[in-house]
Length: 165
Image 1: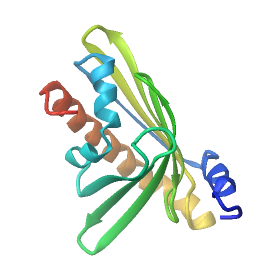
Image 2 (image 1 turned 120 degrees about the vertical axis):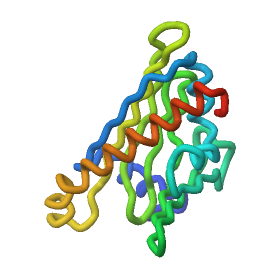
Image 3 (image 1 turned 90 degrees about the horizontal axis):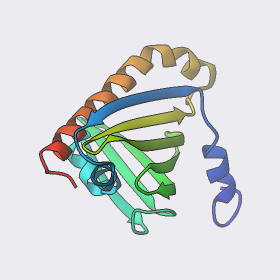
């Protein structure tokens, strides 16, 4: 980081990267309930496999630092996210600001009718590894898309069953 508060590093990480992935799901619940479930950071562990999520700084809203640690066998991936926008009940903006995962992300809720909400999860990752990372992205992208989509489907089921937030 180039300044005491890390603002320059966060501004750099907030620029969209070349690795873009989007997933969408329709949840049979009002937007306010869906949004509350998305903002329950620690509960992401219930719908994102192999992942433990915790708020390490702040209250989970703007300015907070959230850490997601995914462990699969000996592999560990640490994802640090700064919450940069909370526009309730519509949008949560984050910036992935860790060593490996960097770039902006957004979770959007759109009320379709009183009992249905569309959730869109969109990420723009900086690809590590320079040219090799850009070449590998078309191979990695389908797995990222499937993973996000499956996670959102689990999320929708839990909200619809009343098990989230």
